[in-house]
View 1: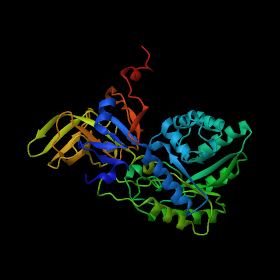
View 2: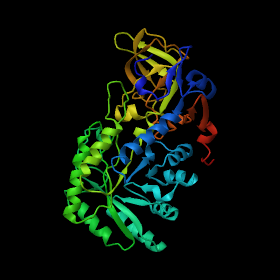
View 3: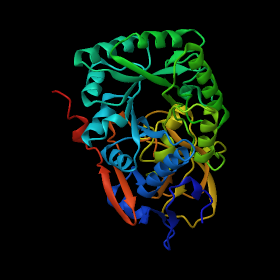
View 4: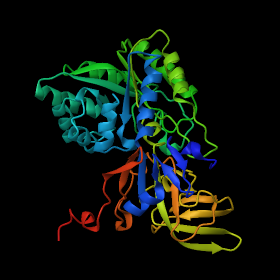
Length: 426
């Protein structure tokens, strides 16, 4: 058995052909049917991750709601699955909200985040009757209050604060420090001012506070420290906390050397930090649910060896379907899905096909000797890879399939060249 199985979806195996198997489906066969690049999601892993978060938090704090952070990846099929598992949604755009509307997701379980919600998005969310807005700036207080007044309603809200706690993750994904575009800082007095202004608006009902420290967070202490700061702040300003959200940011393993805390450990740290306080606890996992459930598949093309320096092996995807390595220096591992039995390794770098020198999916990885036509499978690709995909170089975005008990069904078709110019005028 391959030694990095723990990075793959839960129902991963190798069959007698020495092919990678996900959810009972031979990945080589799936690639033959759907082509490459290809995203594959295991439904069982998705559901089990949802249930693990719900169970671990609710058994420690009954009044908990797990809401899925749609930015990690959302489409109608995923939204329907999340609804079936009893989760809510954390949306950050009209587009994400439109997916919820498309599947008639329960409006009261939708929380709208974002640092610059447009008037149209606010109107859209109010008309759908979403449960909560998470206010992120002073401008939004007035916009939201006026929009609610026009409808004759009182809208429930949370205020996003910045507790100035460093979660020790990549600077691009750190959001809870003082120097961040998100939230009202406590130490500048702006968080208290936001509370006063919000409570003065007759059409807004302030229920509590939200913070989000960043992602992915491999440490537990930042959560409890930030909760301690938030609880102390709420007492200082005299705000009863009916709801408290410590956000998400829960880490997953991208490589064998990365071992994140268990869901149970995150839950224990967060709930214990509440002490005698009993607000409704809102938890917002995204990556931690969808990330481990997905893999990305590519077909090997040409190779280039620079003696004494590096061997590049090119695949038919890259930064257009997974920009994380180029953007965050994110590290991954890979296997050769059609040659799982090979043990002789060589050190190669996996290069994408896009016209950027930074389009490298893996640097200096040990892999079985690769040949043109081989299928490379990269685990932990379910989060942010498809949602951040682009049409750079006019490349169609890959299809997505869901597998379960030996069957596969398409949940997003491959884009066509016609799709790429559908909105153009000529």
